[in-house]
Amino acid sequence: MRTQHVEAYTCRRQTGRLHEISWFSRRSVAASGAGNSSLDEYVSDDHARQASPLDLSDPKRWQAELARASKRPPGPRDLALPAFTLLRGGDLFEAPRKPRARTAPELVSRLVDEKLRLSFNGAAEPEQKAALSGLSRVVSGNPAICRRLLLAKPIEVVLIPSGRDYREYGFPPNTNPIASGIFFNDDKAPTALLGLREELVSRKRHLMVHEMTHAVHFLALTKVERESIDKFLMPVYRSRRWVDEAVAIYAEKAFGAVYSEDELDAPGLYGKTRRDWRDRSVFALFMDELLWPERP
Image (cartoon, rainbow, N blue to C red):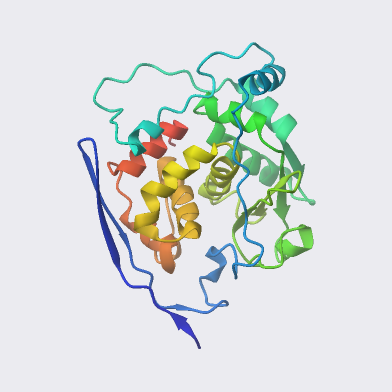
C-alpha cells in the first residue's frame, strides 16, 4: 500500500506582542480508503473548489444590495471585520472590549430564507433542526458575517442519507463518498454546495460549524482578506487545501468543539491541529474575533 510522508515544519511568527509557534507533521497516511479517510473531503485535487470573493469595490452597489437584503439603510461599519488587524500586525486585545451586539435573530432568519436552499432528502425533523441550528451558530455572533453572506451567492444545503454517496447529489467526482461533511464551490456556478451526513448532524455539532466556516471563508471575505489569511498560514501549512481546513478547524474550537478519540487521532492536519490548538495563539484569537462564538 502506497503511503505519503510529509516532514515536520516549524514556523515562529510575531504579531504585536503576541507570539505563535505553529507546526504540523503529517503521519504516514495510507492512500485513499484508509480507516480515517472519511475525514478527508476530497480524494484528489481534480475539480478543486474555488473561492468567490466578496466584491466590495462599488460601495453604491453593495450598499443598495445590503439595504434590500437587511431591510434597513446600511451603516458605515456594517461589513467591517476588525479581526484582520491581528493578522496584519496589530493587537485588538490591549484595550478592554466594548459590549458588542450579536446578530439579530431576524437577520439570521432572513439569511436562511434567502440564501440557504434546503434539500433534506427525507431526513427526520430532529436532524433538519440540528443541521439548521448548527449552521446558524456561525452567523449568529458577528452581524457583519451574516450581512456579508446576504451579499454572497446562495448555498444549497444537502443532508445526505445514511449510506448514500455525495456524488449522487451533485457534488464533484473527486468527493470522498464517505466524508462527514463537504463544502464545494465553483466560482462560475450560481450556487455553492454544502453537504452533511444525516446520521452525524445531531451528535457532531462541530460538523456544521466546520462546513459553514468554509462558506464564510470562500464566499464572505474579500480577495484581500483571503490573501491576509494565506499570508499568515501558508508558511505554516504550505498548502492552500490545508489552510482552508485549518481555518475551519480553528472555528470548531472557537465554538467549543469536544472531539472523540478518533477525531483527535485522525491522520494528517485534522487530528494534529485539533490536538495542538491553543486558545491564546494568534489565529485562535483571530477566529474568536471574527465569529464572536457563543460557546455551549
